Length: 399
Image 1 (tube, one colour):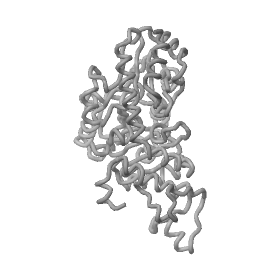
Image 2 (image 1 turned 45 degrees about the vertical axis):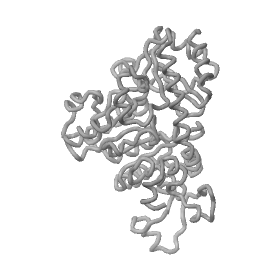
Image 3 (image 1 turned 90 degrees about the horizontal axis):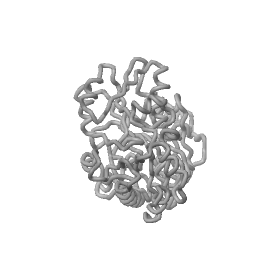
């Protein structure tokens, strides 16, 4: 598919076709799965050229693989970036990237709320190796300005934020970074939205990371991650952060499953969003619910910025019950259809308690500082009939 044609095709069409030509693979409609660890060379010169990078081609599947290359091309296309790297997990993508970009003495300026394992890696991991981790409220631009320094190398955030659904202005934060120092890399976790709803690179960000386990795969049957950025940055992450530092190598079979999932990404996201909107509106009126956090609600503080930078409001909801922790536990234990499980983006509606599950790597004091309350409940709206999801939530809430 030529670049000119690519620009004329819709997102849904590119989700099915980008990066793959069946004519190059004996007419196979689906990409072949190259289950090989190594690749044979025609001669020594070819092998040397591939190792040095002077000649294109694969030489070892810890670095690249033909099936993986198709996925990476497709992801880069959908995120509107130059290149991509697929990894064995979302944390593999994040850690391989940060190990590549950072050195002792550097600073990472981070939004105050993060996915638990990302927080743990930064606060309890990178710090041990001399990297300064500085937290700021990325919805407060004065707070960002006050914490930028000559040592800032990376600015990192999620939007919407996991788990409390704050929405960060990607263009504004990227502009602040570049106006201070054009070399600062702005890194956005786009897992909640996927490129079907939000494309941070088009708003000034430099790097996008994903847990492909979630919406990209879409069926709860794989663990994977991805990074999208300019070609040179991706090359450095591949040959250093992935190959030498983390070894977070994705399986060709997993790649195949993600490619299959991405074919229906837009269709699935439309249903996730529609269901989440209806669920959030119901919860917002429920007497047992103290507050609903969902940018699709007009009374949500982040509704306006979400309307500007997202194509729809996503499938994730958070809420606080009036009875706090005990009410949350009681409600979660009464669910019948929705599954009490971590992760998100699956066909099934998943509900969990962040403080004791996904964000339990925070101490009690850290959770208080970073806006993760003991009574917070996170919902990943599934693909079931929304009336059935709502009925289950109502009965669990005591209706």
